[in-house]
Length: 317
Image (cartoon, rainbow, N blue to C red):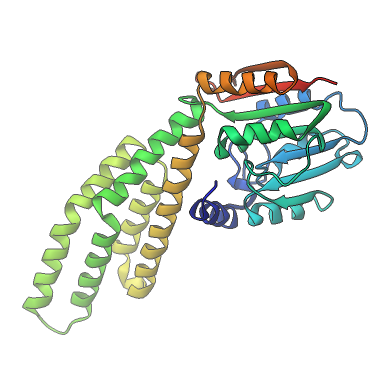
């Protein structure tokens, strides 16, 4: 998340989705039970008054797993001000800082515990170096990060492929032309050959785009492509109940949502790490004075593919 377009995209995402925008978190901001269990075990033996920071924290769901959270100094850092606004609403006592995870504004050894859940990896290897830099002597680093070809990454790949079919088929532009032509024909007085020809041309241009998106829905029945396909079909079939400008606005809004969806899914896929990348991070941590460095796949009972990499490390005194 180092470019202005990335920053803008994620801010729009948080603004639209709120706490439900976090990965593997429900609409109420609650984590998957097995993720929650992993964090509760990590936080089980915290000494009092720890300085704890969540990097690329989003809406801060990790903090919900800290027992006696009010007894610690909590800090959230994220590139998105909108995400931090949500965090402050949920937990007013948390300090927040807007910054990219690869360019932290904190002094060396500033925090006793540094954590991240599906966040720090978006800013690349340098972000892990920065995370290590701010861990205090005898402090801990705990990270859950995206696993390449794991459950989340494989799901993202499927959704991204179908979302891109919206763009490649030019579905939205064809749908706009069709609804405009049909509405003009519906409201014209008598028979107008020019209007009829316009409808035929628009319908012919729309047909392959409609077929492409219908196939996408057959491959994957859920996702933004399915929402667009079903939504436009309903609006088209009931167009007499709507103003054409409202339908056109809905299509324009969907275009923006599709772009945002593709941006997010692409970025999530780029952030997913493989074993070679985790080994490099592990070696960096050891060189930086950390011991007990481990990284292993986090499995959950409902899926055969790993959900995440679980990375843990302890800085020497």
